[in-house]
Length: 540
Image (cartoon, rainbow, N blue to C red; front, top):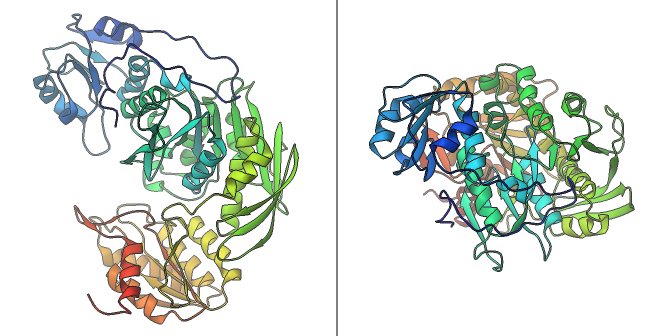
């Protein structure tokens, strides 16, 4: 870990950029005091101003240390202003808020505290995104897999590659650029907050990282967490129903994704699926001077014209272990033995190829990199069946589109019955529950509906909404069972699986907990399945 981050550093290791945006911007060292803060936040009003040195930034009251500036971010459930007095008591030398607060230190009043935090953090940590090639990936599904594939394409002997995403944050070599072991920390959110974002980017720059792959969630984009990041490329995967409990409409959801493309600078790269109509609004958001790379799967209907770089892929064959692709790039055709399953992963690979080729990486190197791919944790991740002769996967599919794509990919590859277990999260978009029930009943032979993070919502009500959709499914081939307890549900579906069957435990993927009420209880789909199979179904 980087114990030194969060404090000004004098030395800056030089960083190398991939061919994305021409020359490197000049560095500017700001004054690390409240007078410098006044420059960054101008023309915002400040009350009780007096100059003090700044030693750090914080947006959580409990994280404040002496000399910090505290940003009182209004959260969705808790208003940071409530902790301003506590922050001052812990040594904060200033507060930034959206209204005057009764504190004895200087208080800045801004329209958007979170965006102000991003601007200040970028200055405080000396714009680390200017020292590396930063690639943003957004979309409903596929972000984590595309991120992992891009990392493989970008890595070489000269470039360490960092990442910020759903599963973990990879901060680069652990001993300043010469080590072989990367420092990896668990992710608290898909996209870090604005201060944490700049802190991690500075850590990577100081470690000699040359490129960063960053998953940009719709929440993060809407809240401006990435506004102060200078992106060299932006990749769009797809847009389907999700997070409507937060955004309210698909239009607002799409608009959040468009923000990533709207902030690209001349010479940067926008990577879009040419055969996806939802990419049209992303293309319209791209400013002049940004290069376009497009990709498509052969046989689809084109929604966008080919870009400056265009990649076309064709699935030659596939099984429950790998997918063989033929991909045409501007340099010619390459064959890729992708060790991932399904058409949706073929599309993920095409997005990575289009981005890498658009950044100037040779297609042969890209093809070689993708043959070394491994399933991302919780993304159609195979699980040891202990000799049972079944194909067992754990997958993060928790949206209608993701569930549909997983089941449609597995359906033609399954010799026996296709079985799926899933649930829907509580206190989230209710509209997708019957839709997911309907999709499962239409595409699988056996459906087990169970709990998946009911939170404080009535678990039985969630199950009923899912089952209502499954019952209405036409045509339907499925037997639908309800087993509320997820551990028992896993045993139930595995008990019924026979040789040649494919079983998908969907929804949790990489997650290691089950949220019930206000408590997070340890739970791992993969571990539960392996324990059950190893015990030949014995009760625990």
